[in-house]
Every structure is written in C-alpha cells, then in structure tokens.
Length: 423
Figure 1 (cartoon, rainbow, N blue to C red):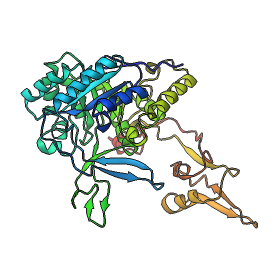
Figure 2 (figure 1 turned 30 degrees about the vertical axis):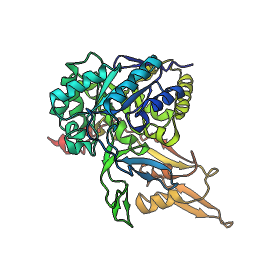
Figure 3 (figure 1 turned 90 degrees about the horizontal axis):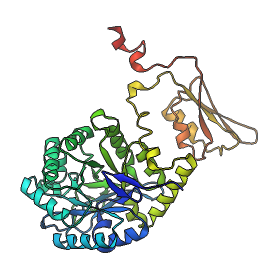
C-alpha cells in the first residue's frame, strides 16, 4: 500500500489531510472527533487576544448547482469567540492525548508588532507544532484592520511574518488571501519575511445570492446582508491556479505549500499535490459530509497511487508543474477534432445545440425514416474547442481525437502572424 506520510514545513504528518481553520476546529470535542476519524492534523480556529468577537445569526449563505447540491458556502463568521485561555488549555490537552497528530495554531492581530509577538508566544507555549498567520479573512475582521486588510498589502505580509519568526522557533505558515491581483506579490513577501510555508487560498470575497423577498444579500441578518468569504468546490479552480503560480515561479518554487480550496475527493487532493502542494487543508467538505469523508480521501488516494506505482507522495509531487506554462508556450499548431460515437449517443442533441448556437456550426444531424437522429461532426468546421465533449451527458460518447496536420510544433511568439516578428 502507498505510504501517505508526508512532511509539511518540516512537520511530520501521518497523511496529507488536515482540517483548515474554521468551525470544525473550534474546540476540543471537534478536534478529537476529527482525529478519531483519521485526520492527520488540524489548524485550530483562528485565535486573537480576546477581542470582543460576537458572531451573527445567521452566518452562512450557499450557492447550489442545478441539482440543488451545494457547491459553495459564503460565511460571515469571525474568528474564535471563545476566550483565548480556554482555547490554549484545550490545545494542550489534545496535544497530550494525541501526540502523533498535528495542531497548528491559527492567529490574527492588529498591525502592531507587540500584539503579534505576544499572541504568537502564547499560542506556541501551548504546544502547537506550528503557527498559521491569518492574513486572508475578507469580512468582519478586515474592517478592524486585520485579516485581508493586512494580507492585501505585501509589505505588511512581510512585516507580520518577520515579527512572528523573531519570537518563535516553530514553523510559521503565512495564510494568503486570494483577493489580490497577483498571488506572487504576497507569496514572495511571506518568503522574504521568513515564512516556512504558505497556506492558500483563504476564502474569496463574495455575495452568493440575494433574497428577493427581503431584498438583501444572504445570509440575511435582521433585514441586512454583507459580503463574506466563499469556499467549497466552486473555488477549487482559483486555488489550483494560485498554487501552480507559486510552484512554477522561480523565486518561490521551493516555498512549502499547504493547499486549501475546494478539496472534496482524493482526486482533488492528487491534483493539488501534482501542482506542488506539500500538504492539504479541508473545511467545506467536512462541514457538508462530516469528518468520515477523510476515509474516502485516504483510501482513494492510496488506491490511485498503488495503481500508478507511486510509493509515496513525493513520487508525484509537483509532476504537473513543468507542464503548466503560459499561453504563449503552448503549441499553436496542435489540432483535435470531435468524434461522436453513434452507439452510445442518446440523441439528446445538446452537442448540436451548443455548437450551432454558440460555437462553430460543426455538428449536423440526420433523421432516419424511423425518426432516429444521427449526429456527425463536420471536420472542416470543427476547431477542436471541446465544448461538445464537456456538455455531453454520456461519458466518453464524444472523444477529442488528435489530428496529424503535418504542421511543426510552434508557439505564438514563433508564429509568422505574430506582429512582434515583423520587427
């Protein structure tokens, strides 16, 4: 069986699956249940120096797909509203009872050196194996000069990271906000400040829906609503891109990454690792399906690794990074054509409608005397966009087949139609 042991910022972990800082890691009982279920670690819900934190009711808005499955949650919850000392006492207790598991202490403070250093020392003395600096929360706390109010300013990211590194001798994870134009600015700043790793992404600033009866964003609190932090499977593409950007950026390519954002299955986990993640954090999936979801993640990842011949996570970590390039580095002469398998086609016509109305009119259909519809691709019109293959409800009914057009490998900078080549 594949070995799922890993090391994140020098911290040994029995598997790559940690619970992210959130309601599931808010107290002793939650964390113990998580460890009993098989999670390797938790990032304790963000702690502050006993600020007057009062949470709202309600706290969550959701975004659903057409099948009414939740694909994203918007939350307006703040950091821990429990006294700091109670949290620290519970951390000590769990560390004693579960010595083989990881506890990272998430923390947040105003942009004052003394506040960050004193809080970091207090949490470190509780026995955590690392600290995570929450510089990403996009609601509530940022209005107090914390969270993303710091994380959106690279100079502050560097400064806060350095402050904490000066007073603790355990690994420091700087948690990055996705609500920034270029994730590399904050990643490089964290590295300059001495971060042992970065955690990303934090939640995406959002309004998920509007209650059209109350005419207010959801969740509605006494007739009003606000923006919140968006998480869940819907943010996975954003997170994958930002992890990849850090992994393939020369200055940050060796920076350790604790990846967060829409991880719900073993396949999600494998994709993040393939793009350079050293460890993984999960929140929304646990909130929707419970702690036992980690069983499927562990079993699925292990089975896939066995099938592929990967003995350890290190065997495939970062393997997709080299194939993640800028658009200008893609082969512009590569060509594919769609092929529709008439045997598995259910004659729904979705491919034809999509191509006819919104693409290249490359799919025709004929109707037999018996009323059977046969859909065929017009190769001369097909540009290989693969929209038809994506929307087809039948797996593998439409295949994108590479075409040997006799043209050499060529990138856009090399193409004769590129105006830059005229100079």
